[in-house]
Amino acid sequence: MEALLKNVKFSYGDELILDVPEVCFFEGRVTALVGPNGSGKSTLLRLLAGLESPHSGHVLIGRRPSPPAREYVAYAFQEAVFLSGSLHANLDLGLRLRGLPSSERGLRIEEAANACGVDHLLDRPANRLSGGEAQRANLARALSLRAPLTLLDEPLSGFDEEGRRQMLEELPGLLRRFAGTTVLVTHDRNEALHLATDLVLLHRGRIRAAGPKREVFSNPSDPESASFLGYTILQTEDGLVGISPGAFQAGTGDFTVSLEVEEVIDLVDRVEVVGWAAGQRIAVNFPPDSSLPSAGEQVIVSAPTGMVMSFTDPVSKTVDSLSRAPVA
Amino acid sequence: MGAIWEGLVEAVRLIGTGDGELYSIAGRSLLVSGSATALAMLVGVPAGYVLGRARFPARTLILAGVATGMGMPPVVAGLVIWLLFVRSGPFGGLELIYTKQAIIIVQFFIATPLVIAFTAASIQSLPTRLPDLLAVLGAGRLQTLWLLAREARLGLLAAVMAGFGAVVSEVGASMAVGGNLVGDTRVLTTAIVTETSRADTERAIAYGLVLLAIAFAIVTVLTVVQQRSPR
Image (cartoon, rainbow over all chains, first blue to last red; front, side, top):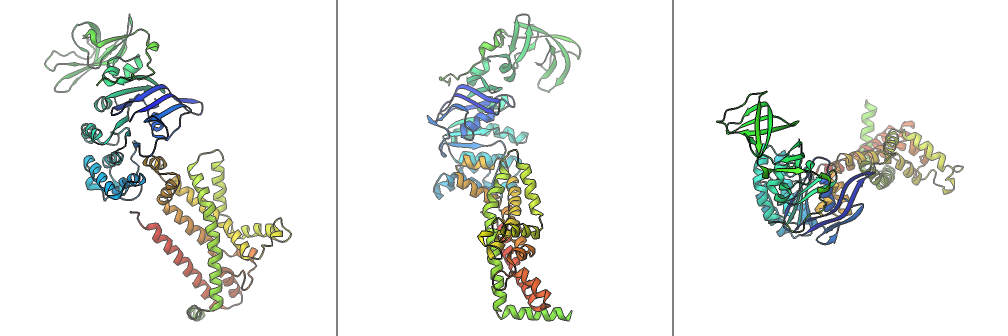
């Protein structure tokens, strides 16, 4: 099911929170809404869920105006909230409210709980689950609904490092199995790249870039978007340039800068040299067997031309609509 | 000590033999205080829900007013209602003074602040995201209200207990607006005062025991419902 926002404006009082000329979330795709805190990501998700109404414009879910019919949307909030009672009763509630027969509900609960690894917790009081268990249960509840549009707000928050790593591996498979079109919110670039097929980059309530992730990632429209995507932004004589994450290497090359070394961190398989170049703090990976600089030393680092982009006119590159032809 | 023991024995005999006057007064107490509590729930639960959930400028002031109402001496409430409903008062034409209805009205005003305050506190203690969660799970407006009430049942049943407990045990207000008329507006508390002043210890103790039994039975039922875990 496709979801579309057209000419949507949303404010709290006089403060404009979201201003979206047009964005489409395509059927069957997993779109990550990314951007810094306060950029309007969660508000956009709430608009899609019908929990907020736009002050102007339209939100269309499957070509019908919002609020969506109850069976169209599943939503996992960032904080796992449960009613009193067992986890089974909590998973059952949404299915019951959607009018599913008992046998179908039991099957769906079993499948989603198994897939999310919470089947052994079904008889436990939901409000007494640990942080990681509660997040898995939260996801199981949303996925058990098998809604055409699944909305996930920071699905990997609340996990410890190991749980997060596991969930990052499991989630794409879970979404393929249980979810249709998926929109997820994250402020973590790596999470977004790992989980999503498309990216929508929000900044101060406006869409700065939208499209298939490779396209958005390789063509950031402005320095702020590029910076959020992990690019190193440097001021040069020719203006602002952005260097792709991980592009810098030791030695001379197409785009060369002098780095004043601040610290050298031994990460066993590689050495990270952190320093300052053109007023920016950057980190460059050195091979562990290379001769390493010391703090305070100047070293030459470079990036290939193909991984350096220029921002001569950042404002004109702001993107307000998502291409309707996703790249597979 | 002997008089108290004799009083207790006589009281048990009165209760056991189904003394007509005793059971008539007890029934009236239940009717009056039950009606007042039911009306207080009808008004106080929605008001408490709004005060617990909504944010508006006068909210804190209203909550402070409600808290003040909780501490209001019943006899003062009785005085106010008496002044309003006495024949020369603004509502004197309704001829409600010294009737059961007048006692229900005054007890309603005593119980309502308690019900509002307990309801607001229990609604406020629920996770703020709960109504949103219920909405996205597919609950309609009425289903949401029912599920929220079920989640807040500890506080809501505490509100019933506090409201009923306050009105079934008060004496000053009922005396002021009801007049303690035999066979008409005499309730258990006013009857205890009357029999004590007459030195009829046996009847006073019997009324006291019945009052305690009623309060205990109702609170026990409510506590059982309150503590029962939902499936």
